[in-house]
Length: 89
Length: 129
Image 1 (tube, rainbow over the protein chains, first blue to last red):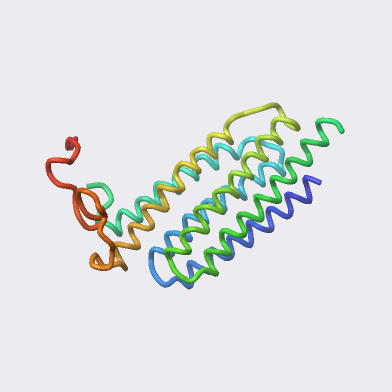
Image 2 (cartoon, each protein chain N blue to C red; image 1 turned 120 degrees about the vertical axis):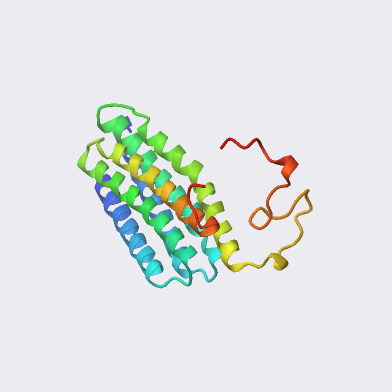
C-alpha cells in the first residue's frame, strides 16, 4: 500500500516539476520566474524525501534541510535584488 | 487492526494527499492568469503538500525504521515559517515593477506603502550598521 502511494506521490511531484519548468520557460515577467523557481525547490525537497522513504534511509533529511535553507535565501536574494538593485546594503 | 496496519494506512493517506496538494499548487501556477493570483497556489497548496510528505516520512521512520526523530518536523516548521516571507517578498517585487504608486489606496496609517515610501526618520529603529 505504501509503495503504491509513493508511486502516486512521486508522479504528482514530477508532474508539478514539469509545470514549474513550463512556467519558467513561458513567464510574463521575472517575478513569475522567481516564484516558479521557489516552487521547484520545494518540489525537489518533496521528491528527495519520497526517495528517502522508498530507500528506507534517514540520510536525505539533512540534504533537504540544506536545500530548504539555500532555496529560501536565494529567493529572498533575488527579490531583494529586484527591489533594491543590491543584495547586502 | 494492529499498529502496523493503521500506520500504513495513515502514511499512504498522507502521501496521496501530499501528492494531490503539490500537483494542485503547480497546476495553479500554470493555470491562473495573473501574477498576484498565481502567487497563492504555490505558497499555500505546495507548502501543505511538502508538510504532508515530511509528516508521512516522520510516521514511517517512527513505525518501520529505527524510531521517532524530529528532523522532518524541523524542516516542516522551517518551510511553514518561510513560505509567507517568500510570498511577501515576491509580492513586493511585483508591486515594485508593475504597480504604480497612484493606483494604490491610502494606507490609513502614519506613513505610506513600504515599497514606495521610507519610514519617517524619527520612527526608524536604531541603525546598527
